Image (cartoon, rainbow, N blue to C red; front, side):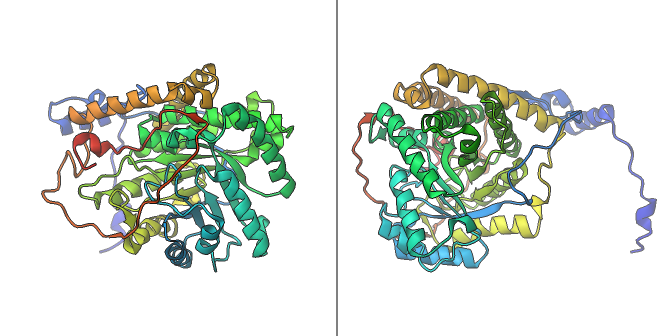
Length: 479
């Protein structure tokens, strides 16, 4: 074909009036452009088309270079097999590893044994220099920090040559397990001493996290997840203050973990909103804002048991949204996670999803590609307002830990989960492969043989645990 033909092609200009006419034609009398409006779980009304947002500025990021770090979970109860998996992941392109210990709220029934020997075995023979190593919030978080630092000393690993996130999140652990090993008052009194030791060791990276994944997977809306994370981060700032650590130095050691799902616009806006909210909190504390450090994990609650291959599409969309929104690190759950411990094929698909987005789609080359997009900017701002309301409500209940102890956060999250269940059952929310185009027969799903570890935990304080529940379970998918 003669390429000169491309110079002769003319495309008609489409203004809003012409666009609306095209929409009406395509709907064939069953509605107009206004009928394409939609509403989020938080009651935010959105239109189908928005003009460019004037004066919008790209969000600042903590990373010096564009892109993100692909992180693979280490969650096999067999430390030696976990080590083989981790070696394979690193050899095939993963730049980060996430230690998911048994008993962690996001272990989904599995997880490495919570012992220093298991950690040493799982990380054996892996060069951690220039790698990202994180740990999921779990009841043994504080002890695991000591185990890791001892491991670094024994293997002569320089923490300054890697990035770290210890992921300590008392609120996520309390909500996900329903228990704390000490009273809230004792926790608040003892943690500042632990912080002092952390600073004395001069370890880089994230110490504490505002972790919203437990709440998301239990049914929280986007604004609820954001508000809870913000309340958690503020509680961390108070603890740093009690440890007599200047907040300007403490703030960079606080990070966030959240979930991204198949609703790409909401997931993009949620991450962008978190960047803005954290900057606002720091300004309120009279410190120069530092960019939020955000770890994203694809949603467990969006995964389906029927037609599990559709989960690959869901996690790909979610991963796309995480990168576009501005996540620094990302874990993609294997598509068979609801059926058991992922086998090598499922882990490889999860890993390669990120590698393709990075190396073939070059998705991370632009820091904030949605800056100025009218719809995204509107949704980002509305989520900030709704999340700030949730944050203030939690603060009025005595802070996130006391709100959980009183059952207030749980009540709002479970009410949102029930509202979503009703939308699934009345057909207003469809699930591909379950309620829409359901698979006509069950197909075998390959998983690894693994025994869920038994966890016992002494509890000084208890609350109603927020357990993960998939949306497809509301539709009779498969429990």
